[in-house]
Length: 106
Image (cartoon, rainbow, N blue to C red; front, side):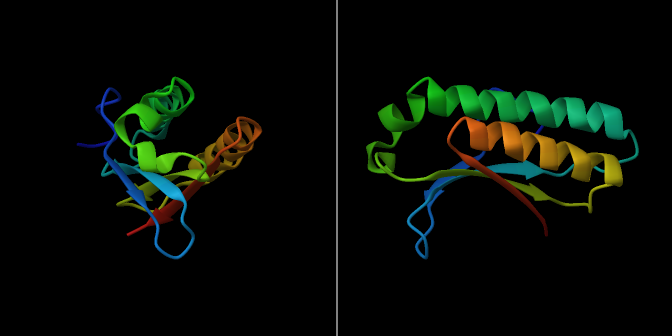
């Protein structure tokens, strides 16, 4: 599973420290073609939002009920400036929907 398969949620878990539900995006792509990479990433994030907002998360993981949902993108390569701007804008959109978005580099 990876960022380039938008139809699959890569991983779902409950973070012990916070109790948050964490949906992980495994992003192995480099940033050579940043616009294409961002398009793939946006598609994946849209799928994750649909998964949560459409009720599939609660259907498949009833233990997620009442918990804060965080989408976490785990990057293999450090993001370029354009990607950092994308993450900032996407985080605001995701927050407006009632969830959180974060990213980190392995």
